Length: 122
DNA sequence: GTTCTTACA
DNA sequence: TGTAAGCA
Image (cartoon, rainbow, N blue to C red; front, side, top):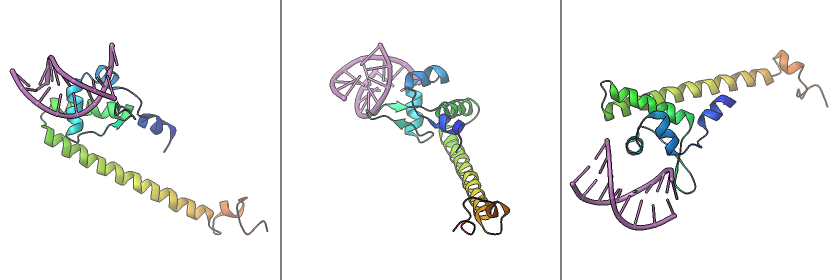
């Protein structure tokens, strides 16, 4: 995970900021969370902590509800999107692992010239 | 002052 | 969905 994603996942913003940036009310945000449309981090004192990704998702929920969708439909739609993203992420991890195994293998040029090649030094 | 939960109009 | 009560 790169630094951009890391910062986008950093949950540090209070609900007051989320309210101003999304245009939603605290009531709505808490209602969406209670109905599993979004998962929001909590502080030690049980206060909600929002990340940039949280805000983006809240605005997405806001847009979807304004169109045609009902709460149940939005929940299922977002749930499926989450599954897809997870699968893509897992696939990416598998590709990276596969590449690393190849690069570390004795059949790879990178391995033959690598400082970490166990066959070169001692 | 802000946020949280619960409950009622 | 808004709002008030009582806490943290």
